Image (cartoon, rainbow, N blue to C red):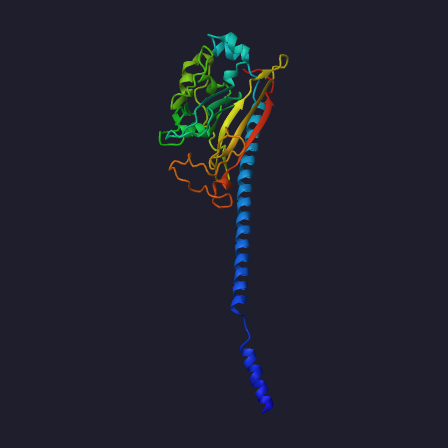
Length: 332
């Protein structure tokens, strides 16, 4: 009997063992804190990874553009200042020669940075668009500010089958971000330079047309071929991010008096369209709290930096410099 009673007491004591309410609460609190910590760490890792991909995309495309521009300049013939100024700037040849035919190499225009609804995008004047002619390829671009402000370039040209094309094809199509034409005779820059050696680009107009077709037809005595190959338009595509030029500047060309080789150097600012980038600000160029550039006026996607969908994670900006010289042979 004594042994049976002892066994029953042990069973009773065993059935009463377990977690108390305090112990259970502490355990659940610990698990909850652990899960929250894991979630925060995971969110930070994803944020850093996405930011890294964005920076990688900007740097990769920037390096590709540097290779593009330097290769185009290196393979181009020397800048024939005498021929260009004598044939195209006939009413102001002296000024053209003094500037080493700079307008036939690079032109750009600036203005106020405002979106289609008149909201300010930058406190200072910014570049809208420009042209760059290397002697082999010519480039036409519209910056973010030009597209957002509605001041862009429109290009008309003839292809090899003498069919006329316009970029953009209609008012509903987006303005080109960066075009590349095969253009050994610098027709792109010549199309926006008057006979008095003045730029005809007009930043006050909502759209300025570069009519390469008209230039070729009006300068038949120079034996310029009318058709041009279709331009390359995908020079800013990478990682499915919307990358745009915010500024592109070329310094005045310099030329060696003996070899006639032309030295060109320039700089450009490349950044994502997202992230409320403003290159006129000092410090943080990506403003995650500024919603003035969102067309719907709402603060969508511009939450905390730690938010996986934050605009900050998809915002990257970098400035690139390049320099190159021409091959040093006379242009025919």
